[in-house]
Amino acid sequence: MTTLLEPALKQSRKTQLEYVRMPSLPFVELKHVSKGYGAGSQRREVLKDLNLNIDRGEFVAIVGYSGSGKTTLISLLAGLIHPDAGTVIIDGSEVVGPGPDRGIVFQNYSLLPWLNVFDNIALAVDQIFPNWPKEKRREHIEKYIAMVNLTPARSKRPHELSGGMRQRVSVARALAMNPEMLLLDEPLSALDALTRATLQDEIEQIWERDRKTVVLITNDVDEGLLLADRVIPLSAGPGATLGPAVEVDLDRPRDRKTIQRDPHFKRLKAQVLDYLLGEGARKRPHREPMQAVG
Amino acid sequence: MNDKQFRGDWLLLPLAGMVMVVVLWAISSKTWAPNLPSPLKTWQVSQPYLMKPFEKRGELDQGILRFTWYSLLLVAKGYTIALLIGTPLGFVLGMSKMFAKTFDPIIQILRPVSPLAWLPLGLVLFQKSEPAALFTIALCSMWPTVINTAVGVRAIPQDFLNVARVLNLSRSKTLFKILLPATLPYMFTGFRLSLGIAWLVIVAAEMLTGAPGVGGFLWQEYNSLIYEHIILCILTIGVIGFILDRLMGVVERRLQVAKA
Image 1 (cartoon, chains in turn yellow, blue):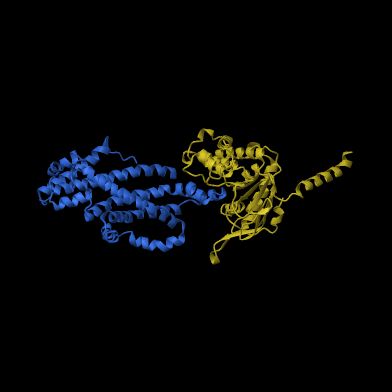
Image 2 (tube, each protein chain N blue to C red; image 1 turned 120 degrees about the vertical axis):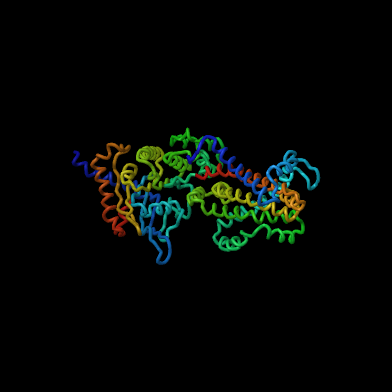
């Protein structure tokens, strides 16, 4: 009986998958995006012909060499810079500028040093929810401070906090904006390994709860595989482009201690590294970047 | 920072330095500079001005702190004008490259001009001594504010501006919530240097206009051959300048912490 049913089951699973994916447009769509800086002989191509689709609620990690244009990519998604060629489409409309629908956690925290933890987040919340009563805004801010475990430090200024704490404030600020999408630009790269692990867990928990669309930029393959649904390598620059996506079909929650010994994890890691150290390192545009599309 | 020599060195060493200078002064007045009043003589002659510092015995014969008060009032007015003009000017210079290119050369040329050169022009322009003095104080003392503010604006990290852009802050909110606080430590360094210059200029301005104040008193006592009072005035000007700088320094340091 099972043998008889199996093809039918397979068939139905496949159509189901297609049903889920096909009719909904991707939430984020990068089409033939190129970006460079400078002019004439000084011109340096940073990103060349990038194509990428991200679904709503998906957690995508972009892993690449430092200096390969990862920050340029996130700035394009944020709308802080504009592509020289191609288009960036988010939720059906082309990105023309930055907006509070995309919360960004910058690599260097970007907290305002003259404001304390509460006020740094309040600056964002007051701006985005001006019609809320004062008390509601205060509760909202306190909630996100508590979410990143910073309630005891709520009245401290950034220079009184450790790097990990500052980064947590930055994450809380981005989340408190209640954005459609979170852009994380190497948020943990300046931290020591232990703090890094703690914050990775916090980011995963927050994502599990809110299921926001997340784009995480990182130079750590393990971090990408631990957190993301899909890891996409970015080749070395100049003229960096996206390599083939690696679907991370590991069960969640992922345990960082046991996962390192998981043969499947090792296989996925090898796939990413193969591209980054092989084809992606040769500074040659990948032939079929479209296959990265999920 | 641990170059402590011995206990109480913070007090004893400066005192020793002062004693040495006073001894040198006493020797000088006894030997090669017979017109220079000795420290003791200076003390005796200055005593009424120091002991009753706020007394007004006549228009040109007042306690030293009363004179100082007049001078400080004049400085406060001129300095306020300097800040009101210098801060926005610095902001515009820092924000617009074109504006900076246009006006930087002329600022560099006007900046080193001595107050003694501006004052006659002020008298020509305003015909009265007080506005001329204010003109000179404002014009000489605003440059550090202009330049430091411009440097501060240019030094604002792109990240802070990105925060403003991501949040879609309005222009005025960007100015008051991001630009001004980020520039404040630099601005205040400019304010402190400007105050120092304003205090320098006041003496020259009073000497030339004859306005009542420490500078005016100094010049009048020179003309009356009471040299002891010249020294009294010099010391007063120095001490007041030192106190002003320290007060500004305290505020400045508080702001520097915010910069970190």
